[in-house]
Image (cartoon, rainbow, N blue to C red; front, top):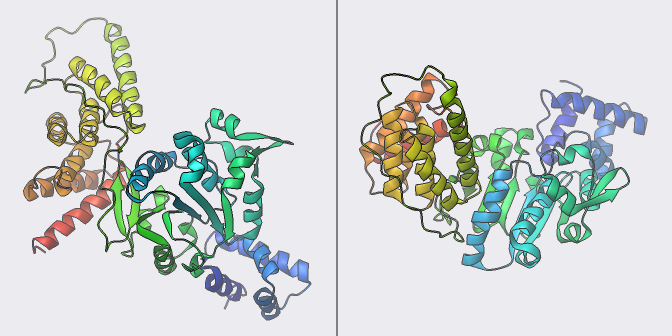
Length: 455
């Protein structure tokens, strides 16, 4: 047995941390520091000290996690919370709503949520929402409560937000006192979640934390976190952790490209790709497209630079339409895409974006038509196959099991050929990561086969 095994067992039993691989090097350093501080080299005596001395155990644990975090990490999820889920939740349940950052480290995540909500609701946010951060590491919790940060914490934060919510504190920056006092922090062990003392919460963020836990521990953690959720509350993991946390404890959902988990015994409180309740602008008139792609002119111009500038301008406008869609500015995106499709009626990028806009505005028949045209131009456009199948699965169009099956099967076939296929898109990136589309298509196709008694 390795001399590290007793320490690994203790940490796993108390905190669930899985100290293998690269994490083992941190454990070696922590044990060496413990031996120096206590002048004890006997493993059994050191374990006994850690068991009996909570302050010593806290210092030991603080050396074992990376605590790599920063403001506005994965901003798409923050914007979806502030602009889509929480407004609907307020309308259904009323205020205040409770938000919990589990494994909050030094506090950048709960403070980022607070900033996003202040940007969306102004000072009313402090009456509408309660925000709490919890972590097992007492040293990082102390830092979170002080709210003082240095350079790398701000690497993804818009400079305007940095200027608005922070002030100089020596060579570092301190978060605005009113915001700091709004967010509360507490000691929290994911393996000992106690619903009697904490929660329930409408949103639990458990992002970029589960990398420290093996699958069996992640299952235990989800069971504990599930107890802390309000009915129809949601659990959100980091983007790269989502599929690894789809363990059958909570049900995986997708809305507007954001993944979250809910209690599978309850109907979803937010249908996938639901329209934000505060945007009800009518969709501008859609461009009428011909049934066949235009043929290239017989005589191409001798000077290719004649078309270089218009194409550059078209691509820039496509990127702008993509940005508007990501900001939920659906009317503006639709108007821009309508103009672009007049210029290039068979642009796969424009057709796919127009389909997404139409879908989020609940113009499902138009969305289907746009996706269909994108597939006609580029049969390899797996995002169009995926979102077209979603229209049927979610009941946005009258279900056609055959078409739904073909759509998901096309996604699997195309991504089997190339896991990072661009789907025929030349300007924008696929709206859903290929790995996520493949996973979901496989899952939904399997569910359909089970329902039909096939396989």
